[in-house]
Image (cartoon, rainbow, N blue to C red):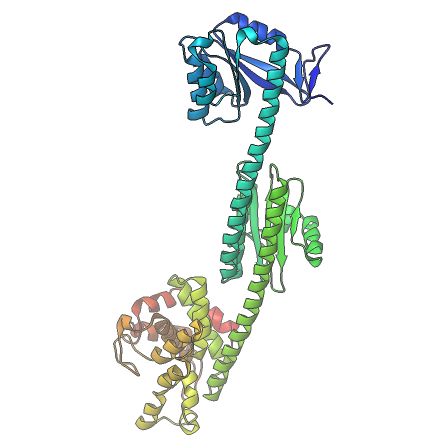
Length: 511
């Protein structure tokens, strides 16, 4: 079936609109004839819409105002002998428009020889006005429109390939950062930002979206944009509905984590202890390659999420074993197993107050459980002696920091290396009167400084063989008296700035 339709009766509207054609000529008669000859032309169910300019400057203005012009019928000689050719340079070189089709028409061929123009300028056809019959004009216009459509399709393919390549690069970068995430929250935020980068191309700006995480507690939105920006820390189920959540859960049971609907994308992952949900809505358009990239991203995200879950499982097991070892050591010396847990909580609280990041805080909390592991090298008759120790026996007790350090110092694991330093230095004093090395001030490892304060505070507020427990105010007064003596004054102040936090930890882990 032919692309060209000659309408017997002009219709005012067509389903697919019109092709915008710019006529540039200083002769008003040429405009009138061109419009008359072409007024009934229909190509691909679209009519022609004409714009008229009578000189180069007028043409440049119309081109600037109409970025959807597909065809220019251009006179060469107008206000200047090369006005038409200068307009071609403006279109191709200054605007970088390589799609618009240009047909040069001239009544003075000698001033712009066809061979030179065709070689030097990016035009699509060159015709002398005297040779341009109605039928030839029809043929030329249809060929130019067909050529425009082909180039537009090729340009769209090129752009899609470029975006696809860019999307693959984003997915590669995202995979590296997701597999490197140390915590569920970090993983969720990274996944959200990477997905938004992947989907937020020119057609999809200012999207409404959010990321939500459940991590051993309530399901909560971590970050949001658009209409979700003001509901951070709220329940995501209220935002998108229980029905969508149930659909996502049923999909996940079948091994699928990505739900693409008419105007939204949901990416859902769940594990035993935490769930991740990323929701994006008001999406303008998703092409086939967008679906392909999203599915690829979802697949990589699932693998990274499972890797995180397994890593957390392994780390959790290791942490539990470390705490158990610490508990065994403490119970052997008549301290309670809860001492290890409380000291860890006190350390985490103090670390957060001085601005340690989540990973370093967690590492300190676990490493603190081993601060007295060196006591396994102390003989029972000294360690368990019910009476006050002699000077010689106390010297034996003072060897336990080095014993603990010697046990852990060869480990290549970051947490155990941290624990080894804590073991060695947690009995050093700020004023240099501690043991085993008598180092002072900032030379003492910060983690060891924190553990020293937390260990003493917990020991004072809980009974031991030779004394009853102190109340929390007495213990706080002791720490204040030891500012710049046994302890770093700044750490003491931060530790004691809210005693209710310390009381809450004591109440949570009673002996």
